[in-house]
Image (cartoon, rainbow, N blue to C red; front, side, top):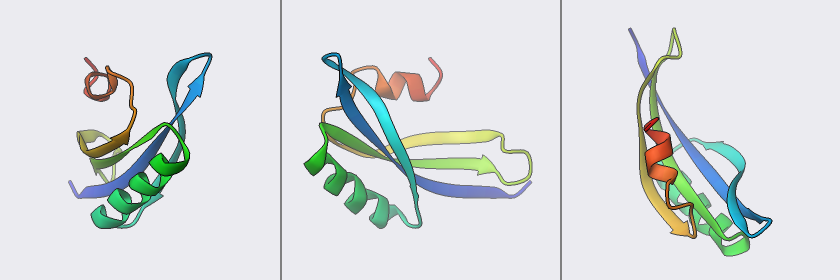
Length: 84
């Protein structure tokens, strides 16, 4: 079982006065994800840099962590990531 770490930037947009997930972008490094999320939050209401660890063969999720959130993100974003 080979674990693979992926860094993702999740943008958030306002639709009908609600924060909703926008585009997701895979970034090569943790520092790159943090910089990208901060830049995206300068143009949109908010963004979060995520670290996702999954089994490379099966795609089964091991963990998802929010490295940092910039600007506005939905209050339940962290809870929804963990499936709870």
